Image (cartoon, rainbow, N blue to C red; front, side, top):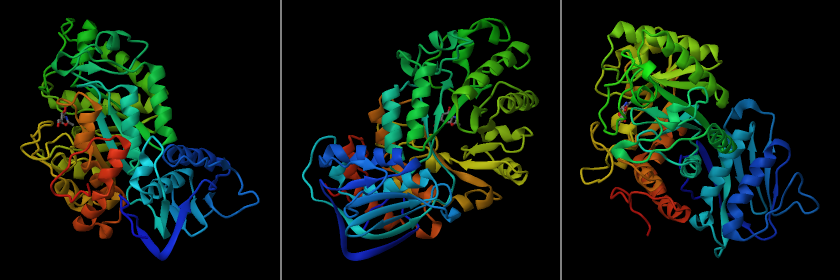
Length: 491
Ligand code: NGO
């Protein structure tokens, strides 16, 4: 099984000379809770192959020429592990949980020619190399983050991004929903947040926001792809859009003017006013109700205008609101200054700050998601000639994004306390999803492999040659990418 699967599976045994051919007689067998995943696979394969690919609970009278989904009893495969066996007559995808079957589909998909991703009918043959894969993730959290606050991205654009990240077994999409320049999710009890605070964007563009119905639609779309949405409402800083929408949220009772620049650190909620906590109680309650996942991200980064004790007591107060509404707290690394409730998670990002407080929090049980800005911030330029993106954490070529090891990144933050890795894209310089994709690909797959594959299976040369095969796949999917000179692209 010669393969270019990204992230690299844990264990692959090729069966030389064996292959399975997808034909107009192939059936998909997907009983019980595997049925929606069978339907998802059929939906991926039908447009380009033109085959009918019926999906049903049993193989019927002709057991050959089938792709079968099996949920099995063995818990060893965990939440997302799977086995994929490709023989001449059958393909079998096996997992303990539906999420594992979904991840198996992503591997299967990558074993087919890139043209399978096209939206219109293509010529075959559609051969899948024979062999067996046994695979499971290293880390539970493999995330991407999209900043929809600095520039707004529509529901359709976000869906396209979800489809592209799911191909790399990314299982979390963190949406940075609010910032100085815009508030992007409807809060029905505070409508001006979006009707006023949603109208701006960096550079003075028209902004936009998701109604709760649209947000719920995004949640559902992501769930169908086993991606959990993590909503972030940034606080107490990065709040100018809220401060511009409601005068009472300001200490002086005066609404702030809208902000369309890209400075950070200047805004803060008024941490002494009771109305601030009534406001946050409403926001957190409404967001929690929209969120099936366990985490709400409270931001907490870069508050330059508050004395440290006020910041700490703010975070400690807000975390109680998150708990009250049944969720766990996630926040940028600054929140570790506070005493966090058990089960909280912090996100490391700031390479210029000491990581000792993060290590100390980890020692006390706070888990860590790693997004080191100099490796995982996909809004950094590839090199000095990249037109899009920022540069404050340096430039990040594909190899830089790939060659780092989570367990040795920070002293005192080892495998046991690392929940996973996440690749953020901040959108100060990005106006279209095309531009987002340009920065995400091919670096996002590098971060995905760090999060999924066993450390011992990772190797730059091997990754580079597998990654090259994904260029034609992105072209077929209509996904923009950077043709990095570090990769020998096939076309
Ligand atoms: C920082 C800052 C963001 C910027 C981003 C740009 C964090 C957590 N806060 O990361 O507001 O958009 O850098 O790279």
